[in-house]
Every structure is written in structure tokens, then in C-alpha cells.
Length: 323
Image (tube, rainbow, N blue to C red; front, side, top):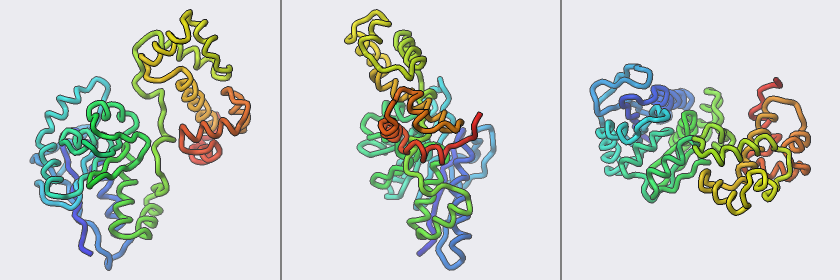
């Protein structure tokens, strides 16, 4: 088996860590595999002669060349950023991505690098993912894509997309597994202290970090629900609290947030439970009661649906020590 040619596409403003993360793990895999196994020929390529990554870090780049796998890192997607203008400024990179796939080669995006793939027309009719924080925006910009915000890595017809930052290691380990074998992938993960058993980004989602609706009515309802997490959900009583009919409350809340008050309450309860599991020694039954569930089994099912893990498993993975 010959060395796998991997190129990382550097461009102005890309995250430097995402440029070097995959090559570094592949380098480790080469050492783990030993000299008798085919390794990886990795290069940082660009359509530009000079590239400054995020934070102004200067990158040494090589001209674009034919590679087996082209990796597209993400960029800093700050609130208020004109994404259209950003993508327009990266027209040479978008063209390079399109040419690479047109030649029948594999392309991989890291985090919001998926937006460049979408701009190149590669996500139409394909399943894709990106950081959960920007999944809705990707789906809005590319309605023909099937965006899976819970997935860490999605591969569909030669196009791979990954979730945020550290998901580049999940992709790299899968690449190592395919090219060098499962044993080398497992050993590389151990050497690098990388989790090779993750399958979802759901446990990391924090809905409070998502863009909040700007309508005062839904904000007031959310605030009331947050302050009464342990209370029994009573739609009629909630409607009376805000002096509207149940139909009006459901309609206005859905128009402003895209969900029902009960759906929001459940996600808010799970958010509080996550915090308690991470930072206290309270039992699962105690936490369940504190957020309005008398039956810990019902709570456990809801928690697993939202996070992908049972409460005890979540605590084992994310425990930070009691405050």
C-alpha cells in the first residue's frame, strides 16, 4: 500500500490548529505503525503565495497539487460576520475544492469549513454536519443538504464533514483506521490521549449558547419556565400567567422559537441536570426530583434522548468536581 497523499487547504483567517491537527495525528500514526507500513504524505497547500491564519499566524504553504484527500479547515465565524462576503473573498479556495472533487478525489471539511463545501455546491443532496452551534445556519444556507447536527463525522459520496474543532481527530482516527488498520488507530488514540469511542456531539450541546430569539413574549415565557423547572407543566395555567389562550401561547411561542413551551422546558431541565451531574454529588433520583421528575427512570430516558448518554454515564464522562 502506497503512502496516502493528504493536503490541508490553508486560506486567510483559517484556524491554524485545524490546519495542523490532522497532519500531527497522522504523523503519530506513522510512528505507531512503524517503517514497514505505508504512511501519509501530508502537505499544507494553498492557492495563494502567503497565508495568515486566525490570529495573524503566518503559514508556510505549498502550491496546490493533486492529493488523495483534501482537508478544509474552518474559520472564525463570529456573531455579525457577513458570511456571504467572507465566502466571496475565498472564491479561489471554493474553486480549488470544486476542482478537487471533480477529479474524483475525497474532500473533508472541519467544523465550519463545511460552509466552503456548501459554496462549492458539494452538499446538495448529501448528508452533512458541522458544529452544532452553526448547524441551523448551514441548513438555512444549503436547504438541499440533509444537515445532521448530532453527528461528529458524516461521509456521503466522497464528501466528509465534521463537527467542531476536536472532531478533526475523530475523522483522522477513522482515516487511520481505513488506511493503517484498527490496531494502529487504537494505539494512536492512546498515545495522543484522544477519545476514539465518540459517536455524537449531542452531549456537548448547550442550547444557551445558541442564538436566542429576539421576541419579548417568548423570552418572558422562557424566563418563567426556567424559574419553575420543578413545577408540573400545565399549559392552561401557563397561558393564564401570560393572559393569553392556550392556542395563542402555542402559536406565538412556536412562531418565535420554532418549538413548543414543553420542548423548551424539557431542554432547560436537561441543561440544569447536566450542570448538577457535572458539579455535585447529588444522586440521580435527587436531581430528577429537583427538575420536576418524580420517576428517575422517566428522567433517565429523557436525558439520554437529549444527550445520548444515561445520567450516570454522563457524570462519569463530564464530572468536574463539586462546587
